[in-house]
Length: 208
Ligand SMILES: N[C@@H](CCC(=O)N[C@@H](CS)C(=O)NCC(=O)O)C(=O)O
Image (cartoon, rainbow, N blue to C red):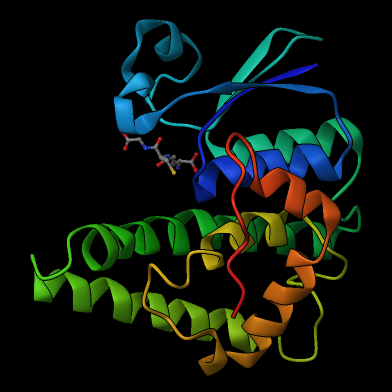
């Protein structure tokens, strides 16, 4: 059994989508980051960086923070959603790390300035929205001639997809990135993605 500590955000949804895809038993603990529940001492023991998501695997007592590490752990535990051949395996890790270092932090800042605080800093809004567009362009080129980021659907897709689901907050028109749009819609149609998207609170997946 996996204990999942999460909230309705892109990083949280990566893990709930993976758990649904892998059909693992899990229990959801809502950590409402709007109410600062991520700073509760009990949560700090599981997530030393005070951020969601985090998991505890009750089978072995292991607790993990950082969504990228959690995705790798779940793929490793089940032998699924991660290629085994050396090239594709490392290509998957490469794109997972790209998400953790690029779209995650940069689009997170775009949400902060373009969605939550519009007009507060034109410089910051322009900087993060433009960087977001550049990253969408990188993904669009990667998806040329491919259905998924690396071979079959994998944790690389699961890591990136929930960030693209916030395209409206990022003021990005998905039609400017047609390969990203088609990949996004393809993944949005998966029942496990639809279930995982609604953890811990039911929400509709935005469609272009
Ligand atoms: N690199 C971390 C980032 C986690 C993160 O930033 N989580 C956000 C929600 S998406 C959070 O917990 N924010 C609470 C806060 O900023 O205090 C991961 O991928 O797990």
